[in-house]
Image: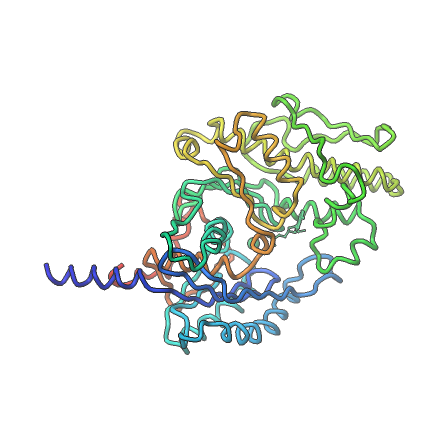
Length: 438
Ligand code: AMP
Ligand code: ZN
């Protein structure tokens, strides 16, 4: 079979050469462009990773029209700068990667149309990326970047599948079991439309002094919650005294919140404390705080600090309890083997920047028999945790190497599940094209 042999050899040669992509992300209010090179060794170099976030502070959160205007304003100049960072020995990238969904329709279209234009002008393929898959694969990008250009040894992407991902952002809260490149099963979905980042943002606006919020560079108000609860001058920063609830019974017990004098401020009920349902729900916790602030608008600063700590504590313990329930087999027999094999918990999304979250997760896993040797917790660096185009470039790279590209006639997808059991998941949408010979 001389023909087949020839084809295999050509494919082999292809996989041994460097790959470069230019990637665009515009699913929400960040306009992002990146240039990523993947070396034959498996390592990667990020030549450019730019981002402009539209200023929607006056609206107190993301404003879709402002965000679209921001993409229209910033995307082309950012692409121009990115192109200048394509390695000089190349005239163009091998393909253009872009977020196709999920996200806001008009926002996605802004990036998708620019990406299509670039792909057509350069005469290179397009690769439409699932934003949530990109968040899940980010830790593999991180290890590839750490391996860099080293030729010494071949770098295999790590963490290897299967691994667990906790996606905690302004739009999402979910626990995902990543079984393979395109199979990410949602073990714990979010019940209400309120994501953990959203709830923490709202809570921060109620508790943190206005002057502190005004000094923030963007509307990520939740970022102010941790330094507010544990001010740098305080002896508990980050709190060395965090003790995880010893048992499930302690986990679901109402939490008395006291000020620094030991005076009871309120008692908070942990989320979904009356059920073992595999779901996240942050609406109830947020409501408890807003009701309290409505009835007592002049709470002293120390009480507000205690409430900020308690809110984070209960929200983060809620995240941990569902992880523990899944590890204990409550996600059902279909996933139990993969869960037994999983050795890594990836925490990603903007809320993963929170150090107290990592303290709570590590302590709770340790205290229930899932120490570092059984379940390592990794969190991509902050700038890769929030929306960025580097993760889109990396996911494009992995999908490209698996043999995929995207048709030029595809539409943006406001909804696009990552779970193969939901409408076929990542590969279940129209527009995928298998590349020849791969
Ligand atoms: P993303 O949607 O992934 O861009 O993440 C944005 C969300 O993460 C917003 O709700 C932010 O307020 C939140 N966030 C950013 N930094 C922190 C932090 N240090 N602690 C808690 N939440 C944060
Ligand atoms: Zn995101």
